[in-house]
Image (cartoon, rainbow over all chains, first blue to last red):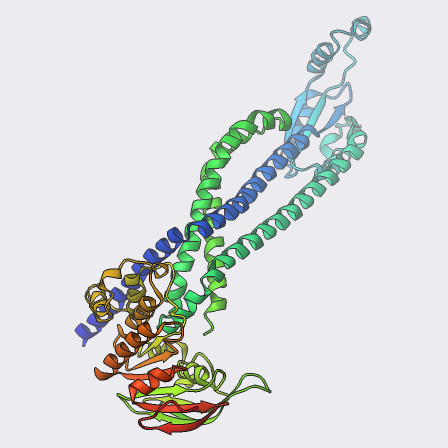
Length: 323
Length: 226
């Protein structure tokens, strides 16, 4: 009994392997012999994958330039002239424990003076005025960077109300927070960032959908040419899976070849655009990004190509299998 | 073996392709179906191949109602029927050999069987030297012989030939009919539709005459009467 079952499964397995082998071979031969049609599918598919890849690049560029902008936003809390250093450091460590805060930098009165002199070294009047005063009029400050620009309001409120910002005799040691000066700029920047992100997403989705529709139609056309063939196959008694297999395999081949072309084409393009992007976006270099993230790009482009090709072929053949 | 039980086929409400046709074909018979264009010959064959569904009635093959078969069984059923078409319907991107091998591959036959049977069946239709030619490199008569080779390679119970000589000159027509006769002599049932008076008269076998979707004559050793 077991032996019978074994033989049965062996036969089934053998015939499955045989069918698989034939599907691969037929798919390959069809792809090769329909040279012109296969080439045009590859061209259209390559353009689609190119669009998808470019959208990933554009997204990264936007992200990196937005981060650069976000990085430039911070607020400063100035402390009264007689605030003891340990109180200021205490405020710093309390701030650093907040979830919203990314980084707090302490600038002492002495350091503020050094920076002032450095910044105004060409302007004699300011330096002279400072020298004539005899004492250092500059205030110590904490420069605070939030994880997101929307957190600044909360940090400002914290600085105004927390007990660590009040001295032992109940006098506030925070003289001034320049949040209100920066408030409109911060809010505007937030709106711009949100707008760019939403717009970018919408454009990406539209472009991807359009390219998928074009690929789908191209592959459908290649299969339309074979509709007679499909009906003949049905009539000589080929099963649905056996008819569909070679088309799906050819679709996957189209996808993988196009993906290879796209990945290769990105390379000189990235070299060419690399310096330009570096100049324009600051710390983003397309070539560096492409080479460092090649594994990720390879996976995305290859799997998109194979998936698109297989799905389009699968759906397109379905239409002609009705007989 | 084949039994049409009171079968009607209406394409739209107005056009009746077949009207209450009852007909049976015994194993080993050679049946010719004649009639004008639009008489219902092709519809009859399409129903037999389950390419079309009957509007009324049923078609039986060895007591199985073929229009009740599920898709997987339909596939197996079609392997028991070999079909020859007027327009040959060869796969244009495949060689003679591959066109025939394809029908065997689709039936799940092993490579050894294919390697042995394809040359054999091509010799049978006298095309052994055109094995590696593509269909566009063959003449009409040669293409039709490939079509017949494809139809018989799986050793079907029935060969259905829908106007197989419709596109051929008299000499090729004669050759194709001789091949069909030979197949019938070896025991395979043949159902043939044709316009060709000469073919019918030379066969001297059963003739069914159709007109406007009905059977109007059924003669055991008929001649072409219209």
